[in-house]
Structure formats: structure tokens, C-alpha cells
Length: 359
Ligand code: TXA
Ligand code: MG
Image 1 (cartoon, rainbow, N blue to C red):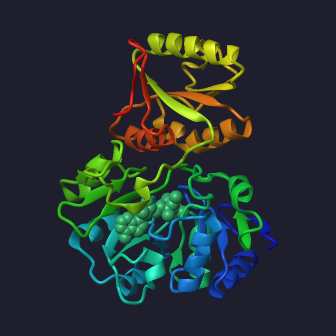
Image 2 (image 1 turned 90 degrees about the vertical axis):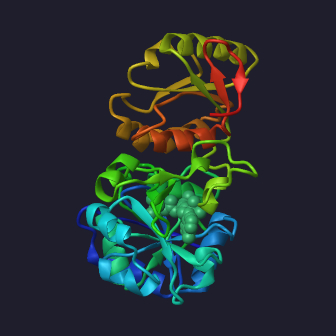
């Protein structure tokens, strides 16, 4: 399949390009497009075959449901069975934006879109290209992240092309995604609402609007038989570059000493070693490749760069990556959730050097 790639302005996308993309979606084809979180791989959410094609293109397990994207609030009612009170308040506060809510699903949605579940995930994105495309298609658009299954989510059109060129009909290149981490997922069909995937809209932000919000205990720890995440997609090892990733924690000086010692050993053995550092710490490391994800004082910058850096280590054929850790709450929760998954929950304690496989 020949994948058409079109550049669009992120703020004022050309209506004729949007119309071309919308027509592909209406005919059951697949179009990757930018959102404010990551690039999505869109297909008609009302067309079971289009949804199947999404799974095939990504190599995604079919029990992992898709998110339906809408472009105005009136499009919510026809696809859900019920609109709980908390969801109204959250929609008012955070839609359009990087928040996905789980609702009881209506009959209109084919089972392929929801992996057979009787709930449906809905998001109203704020990116002008996403909005224009959904509006022009006149359909709820099913869109998982536009990466090959298991790879870090794409924050650039080039990442999408690298993973999916030849497997989808079109890529709209609207430049880098602003947030760089996937949307927060909150289940509003339970009381209090429960976060199933942390993202840019934090627990604290939602609590200001709806009172208590719980966090699925499985999302910050290694999933196990007793601790199974409620969002099916969160159980997979994910976001994983080819390199073995280790999270190194402790006092910064100890972390730097530990990483430098480990890197020296591995490099002597012929390995390519990467360090995922910050603006503040990068100069203290010696390894094959030292990348800064941004400033520790601006966690949103670290979030925006994380997947790009993981992909860069892949491209440089890095064998081992040592990464610094971030706070497990507030904005850090989303970063740590993705980092822990990419590391398969492997931690190294800088002070005692023991490897530990948990939080
Ligand atoms: O930011 C985002 O949300 C991006 C952009 C493109 O909008 N999309 C995205 O989709 O990250 P995806 O498919 O990569 O992640 C969807 C997650 C999966 O973990 C899936 O299991 C969960 O949402 N999910 C979808 N429907 C669900 C449901 N009914 N109940 C629980 N979890 C659900
Ligand atoms: Mg994904």
C-alpha cells in the first residue's frame, strides 16, 4: 500500500487536505493524524472492518480496545448509554483536551472498537488538525496511538512513518505533538472516578473539579495475577525501545557515580550505553550517548520529550539505557508510569547497587 504523506499547518490546516483525509476515513481507510498528546491512527469508529484494519496495521492484540474521538459534545450522547454527573463536570473542565473517559457503551458501537467490552473510551481532542478531521469525517474516529504495537507512542509524523509506512492510507504531518504522553484515562462509570492511565490531566487537577478521584493501584506497580490493570492496554510491556532500560534511583551524585561505573564496564565489553538524563545532570555522565529529556524543573518538558528520546536510543542501536527517575506524583506520575513500563520495572539502587524488580 502506498501511504500518502501530507504536511498540514498545525493551527490552520488546509481544508482541502482535511477533506481528502476525511474521505479516506468515510470509506473505511486509515489516516494517522496529530493530536495534542501523541499521533493517533484513525479509522471510522462505526465501521467494524476499519477497526480491524487498525489492529492489523499496528499488530495490536484484538482485546485491547480503541478510544473514540469526537469533535463536539453533542457527539457523545449517541455513542454512550449514560452520561454520569462526574463526566459532565470533567468534560466542562478539561474537554477539548488530553482526557479520555470510560462510559457504558451504546449499541451503535461495533464490538471491534471496544475489544468486546460493554464500555467505551471517549476523548475530545483539542488539536486543530484532529478537530477539523473528525468534524469533516462526521464520524466518531477510533484512534489508538499510531505506533507499531509495543513501541513508544509517536510524537512526530516521522515516528509514524517509521513504524507504519506502507500499512496505512495517509499520514497528516502537523509537526510535533505538544504533550508527548498519551491522554489521562479516567473511568467515570465508577464512584469515585478511577484513573486507569496517568497523563497530562493529573489526579489533583480532577479532584479540584469532582472531589475524590482514585488511582488504579495496578498502574504504578508491576502488573501481576493479583494486580491486573483495568485498562486492558496497560498490562502489556509497552513503550519499550530495543535497549534494556534500567531506572536508577538515589541521590543525584550517587546516581551519576553508579551509572558511570556501570557504563564504563558495559562499554569495555563492547556495548553501546545510553543515559537518559536531564538538562541539570547531563554533564555529569560518561557513556556512548547521553541525552537530556529536558529540565527537572519543567516536568511537562520531560514528558513531551520522553518517547522521542527512547526512539532515538533505538535508532542509535543502543544496547543498554540507564534513566533517572522522577517523582511518582503530580505530573511525574505519567512520566514514571511510561518509564517503568519501558524498563520492565527494573530498578537499580544507586547507593547499594542491588537490582530490584518493583516500585
Ligand atoms: O492520547 C491518547 O489517548 C492517544 C491519542 C491518539 O488520542 N490514544 C491512545 O490510544 O493512547 P491507545 O489505544 O494507544 O490507548 C488506549 C488505552 C489502552 O490502554 C486501552 O486498553 C484503554 O485505553 N481503553 C480503551 N477502551 C477502554 C475501556 N472501555 N475500558 C478500559 N480501558 C480502555
Ligand atoms: Mg498506545
